[in-house]
Image 1 (cartoon, helix red, strand yellow):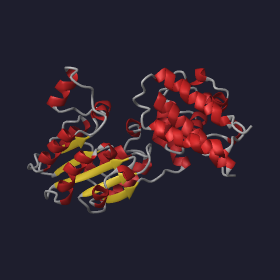
Image 2 (spheres, helix red, strand yellow):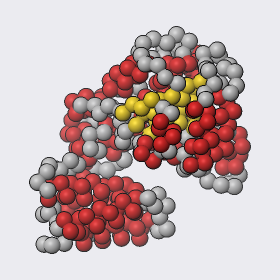
Image 3 (cartoon, rainbow, N blue to C red):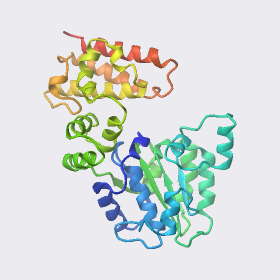
Image 4 (cartoon, rainbow, N blue to C red):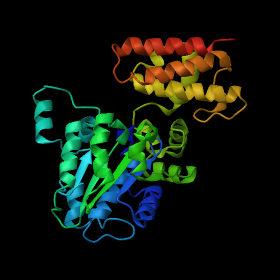
Length: 338
């Protein structure tokens, strides 16, 4: 999800256009919202880089000054980045000395939520004087990883921000944020790039036209997710084979997948089968690759079960057993009412 978001950079044309548009507007707090794979994180980073840049342009930060360099090497004194520790490590941001020591000493694993201690440090950071004289910035991503305690710690600062600090919250599930957080920010819905723009960008990343087309469809038109699917090592032909493999209960077809990857693919398959059963076009698979329509009476509860499984898929008790169970459920649903 969010680590995937990082594979799009600020030079992607749809990110550059949004950067320019948002920089032309005023506001001390932005909420960038939309599904994964559209570039919330690189857009947020482009905004803070421009806000702190010594020679900003209408298009964004100059990329050459000491401030831009400090952001590039993750050492800017006037930028506070709030992320789950797992995301911080994946994206190259340093943890606090205390947090790093706890992880290094194996006292705990890196957190998958934004910790309240980090938020309190961010509130204290926002009250300090700017080190470089260009103001300060706080970047929160993915913002939905704040629990209620952490979000409430941020709320007061959002309500009464110090004069020289700006906030950008980037979210892939903004509906999970507290309404009070959403209401304190200017909202921006991420733009979906055209298929032509996405295809051109994916080919510029080294994908063939055929592979780009397969993975862009598999990602539902989201280029960052498509690139990460392409980089996962899977054969593009496996995506076309996936629906029928599930109908046959073929666990070997997904043996190398993680439970979250399988749940995501099954949700897409279920979506497309429900769409075709309602005389609509499939979104993620070619119609010819789908098995014969299953009964809607079986697809609806399967969809609900997958939604429940998605909440715990990152913490399976036994990943192998979970894969087998998911494939078995899929086989039962796909062969219902035949």
